[in-house]
Amino acid sequence: MLKILKTPYGSSVKTLLKTLLQPHQEYLVDESVETYLDNMSPVVIIVQEDVFLFEERYPKTFVGHYFCKSRGSVALINAKVALAEMMEKASLILGFTPTNNKPARLFARKLGFKSNGMIDTAFGEAEFFSMTKQEWNEKYG
Image (cartoon, rainbow, N blue to C red; front, side, top):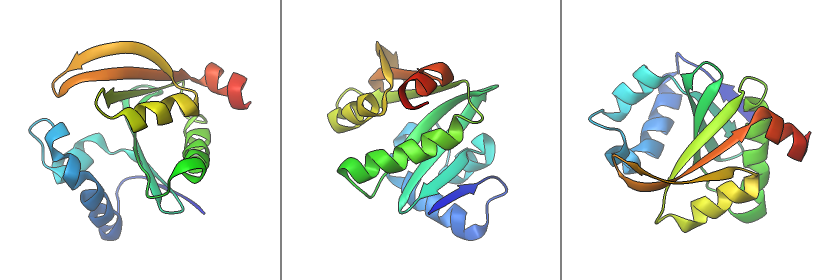
């Protein structure tokens, strides 16, 4: 089951997103979850119980955030479904994963994201990942 949600979100979707984002409040640079959702208006894709947020930072350039309840191959399949949908709109998808989150960094690689090395962020060191539409099409075309 695939759901694609766009703003304005209904109250049940906002509640779900607030619940998902609350543990990550520290990464929202002086914003509440509510303000973040209003300002960034991310594209939200729900595949089964997994939720994927994509913020459009520049035209056709998105930053992805993945909240997977599923694990292993199911999480990978669900993420690929979400990415396939996003690649209809995006030329480039980026990710910034804290270096201490090794499972998430491995997950990005398994999805086909390319590492562009480590960068310093406001939240500490992160690995910078990217995937272009062309790279997606070559891998999954």
